[in-house]
Image (cartoon, rainbow, N blue to C red; front, top):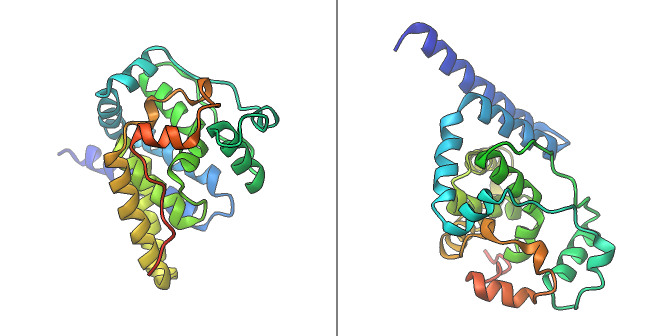
Length: 226
């Protein structure tokens, strides 16, 4: 390997590490997450290419990408009128109760399969929380990322799981058991379930949440008990 190529690879690696460290220290975790992903896309395009190839191996995901499927930001007030047992109502309750913005995600221009799937992953992140039953604290978020690794091989998910493990080991070792439990359970759930990325949730908000879970092969996360 030529010196210039080796130097470029080292710089790419250091830039990625710097972004991850900024994420661990940041008070605005969401924006830092997107900074990490943008850095990965620039410096390690081959990892995203492998992830996209894996995602497209599922016919439902391939059809969604072929259609360039997207949806408008959910109207939370409208979803509150859905049946109480529906996904739409559960999602509206989740967003309202947590004080979240349903359109929080960083937008990207959809120009190919990769950007279509990446945008869809960002757009439906909170739907995945509702369907899997993953909490929104750090162990729950990382558990969902482990689920995502199994389902998509998304590079960002692996980076965040590794970063959370390192951060917990160094700063909150007493929380390591719970974190590892969520990671293991999330990965097992993701490997067993049908692809969430293939689902067009917005067309069926009224469907009962239990029906969605049954069809997808998902058992909601139990409360952690050490």
